[in-house]
Image 1 (cartoon, rainbow, N blue to C red):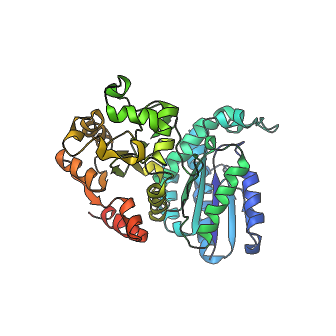
Image 2 (cartoon, rainbow, N blue to C red):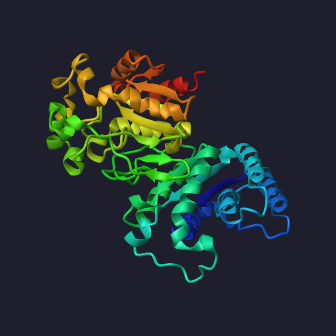
Image 3 (cartoon, helix red, strand yellow):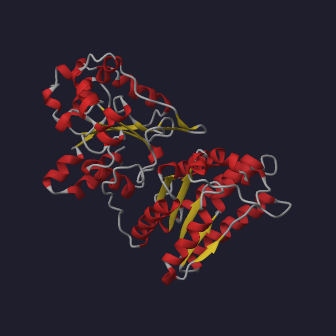
Length: 400
């Protein structure tokens, strides 16, 4: 039974090189590299739909590994952007959604994003064969945003979003991708470990919030008591937290503004991970368990909004030194939390709120917000039953 690795994203992001590396890395599976370009007939819709259905049928009829450098999904990006009036792109997308979801377990998708900064950062020059508008480097951000939005809507379980801005080189990026593909081919979850950087996340300090059609928005959590040095917890965060010292602000939320299916709420950013990098539930033990579990469940980073009750990290995670159930209510981040969540709920009325730990559950109940609760990932790690977190989270996410 055939399996497919899809590499998608704008030009000049090293997709073709990556495809060749994948072909070499998994040579024992005798992979072939396939490139699906634009339709070549006078009836593009008929051609594309026919090509799509033939491609999907080949999953049943053939075995081995195929690597797609530009796939049938690409037409949902390039068609509406550059061939708007040639045929009914919505019809093609509906056909795609139906066909791809029948074979999603056999597909691993790599979706590359760049805002164009990676070209300057890595000194990448325009290719000499850039003839079409969509091949030009200046078009990359628009194409990248559209690819992320299309894969968000498609919702294929095994989808890896790569923010090219998070890597010093394509070699570093490609080594990470290889590990993810290898785990998928062996039917094993990828186990996240500490990195001390942004290489294993879609987000970074300057790119925390995703909005459909817009891409990453410039957003930061504002706190007047922090700026005025009126909050003892905030002052400790500014002095003792690596993130507070480096960025000089509380840690905020990350995730999707208008495509979130889930809102995850924790107690506070940990001293490691979020306390260093500013991204909730990333790059410490609890965060790594959370990221591993989200991968196993097929939850895209554009499918969730993730935040904390308290937004500052005290020294040694000693939160009780500063707040208890009563004093916590006076913190500006806590009093503003309900409005923060309602902004996301307003965009996503069916979003499901999940409290990670009893403190988050307590505050959400006080706000009168309907939610489900699971123990904090740290509890499962402490008890040595980390796999139970996957079961518990899966159960509450599947509740009607």
